[in-house]
Image (cartoon, rainbow, N blue to C red):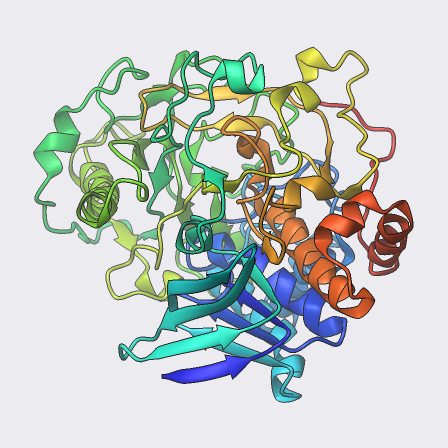
Length: 535
């Protein structure tokens, strides 16, 4: 067994994990960053989800390091892609021109930029990155996690000892391994007082996961995949929240749960423009353009024969069971079920979908395994919306930010704010049978206390596993907020090592808190929102 000793170990290489590692090494600390996939980047890369962001993201509402990530991705296209004249001169270049974001990019571009951001500390020996390493154990001494053991692709084990352990895994794996008090699923209304919480707690009621994939369209070709084994099951399934089969173009509108027929027009008229503004009622109503990650208009004539779109649509939300908390056998079954659902939907699109021109099926829809870095064309990992969450010194609840509960249109101002975020409370259909829960919310802050476990002193959440509820996780789970949480966790670990204090002491000692907040501001972390209101 190999043994490593560093200042900070970050387990999980998603956006939060990468941000945590960068913040810690920038503060002069030695770091080990681990990742179960062979790509860092999580939801941006291995899960293949273009950024979901707030409507003010081009001006404010994220950290300076996250803004650098965004601008570096744009510059990557400018440097290495044959862009059209219009795209080359666009200040806010959006390569996919998708409606979900003002920056819809291919997963490999996100990966390339993240790898570049990690390259200098790796070269200097301050950062070690262990890809394809999964956490399998942790040792604990009282209220301190003393080591984490990981298993590599060859079955060999690596044990990392560090005074600070950051959990940036997609499902809060270290919380379970280290016995850190945590919650899963939905808390009860009695526990949280939230209007949208259920009457009874439901630990296995979690948001759907989605196994995304990239498609282009070659008219006249036949790229129909083999019929998936479970196709008949998914073809006949009529979820409670739907008004018909799951595999169809009719799905609920998240904000109302009313049924709406979506449209799909591969490679539409080049004059069609996507509107990027979630303050409107817009959404995935035109499927092709919603999460398009490469638009032919962006590039020089002839560079692309087809647009490339990313399928993360309501029809691939898998809600037959969670991926953790149910035992290994059931989790593996649900993981396979999520894959089968995505492939079944693709097969339905290719063979049975009503075409916009009156025909049946789009056999020209082609999986793009090269875009997502896999052999079969599905993303490397499923898109996981909900993690285990620490029992924190403070838990963010719906009352803190739901627009209808905040008459001034602003979220609670926390004295210990360490960042900002904004997104609607967007809960997808759940493993407990809930339909969409989509609630207007205010721009919110990230309280430091939500990163502090109630008991354990040296483990910090660095992704979607901070102190939120099932409800508020719905707006704290997106790209810039996950990055912000991870960045603060990495900075906090470095600050505590420098000042010989604990994270809990930073929360309760006003002098330490103000010093830490000043350091965050110096590093480009926004602690407060300007005068904007919810939507």
